[in-house]
Length: 269
Image 1 (cartoon, rainbow, N blue to C red):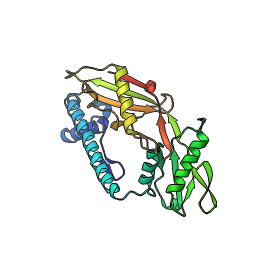
Image 2 (spheres, rainbow, N blue to C red):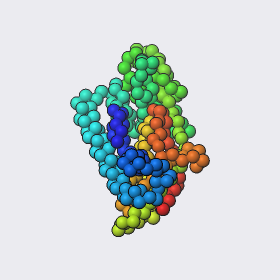
Image 3 (tube, helix red, strand yellow):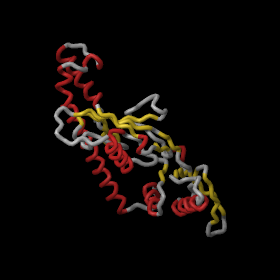
Image 4 (cartoon, rainbow, N blue to C red):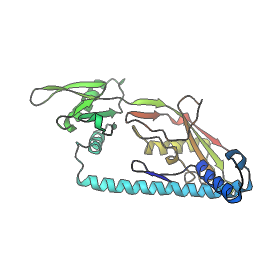
């Protein structure tokens, strides 16, 4: 598994693990298997189930690390989590019913605050919502920090001076999802219908994914969710199915995938 300070441990996918096995066999036995010619060999069949279990354990390890990391973060921030910090501001918004993300600070953005609020600018009450969001920014931002964005509200402070407070709306990326489940030869579990699987996947993503987060397919569905499956592959497309990806989508703070349960297709192989 790879590790980064931002994302923690990231499980290897099935293809990566099988590639490591193939390279080891080529080195050990002086063979020249390619990714294509290796499929269907006795080596491939032997290691198939083993790699599935290994991938499952890597996923669970990454989730355990993530939960431990979150525990330390929450414990530390409980002691001191002022509203002027990005996490404190996000919590402050959440307590008032607004989902936001905040751009991570970099040197060239010194003195600037970038907030993205997941609100509907076509709603009849948007004017009131925009004022409420900008008011929260006013209450949380420290002196000298200038908010940035396309949505602007001029608010008069207690000293009778009016300042513009700003935020951005999300960049919504419509996607389709495709989940392929390969039935395990050792299965003794009840197999859910494709409709039930789609509902389960939708619930998992809804609980674990939000505005500004990377879309990480391996975190949303695994053989733990589908114990009858020997292999699980979740893919996404942002071009109506012309290209499918199982890789991580690295999002900017204002980007979010949008889809409904009807945009999920389940393939049982």
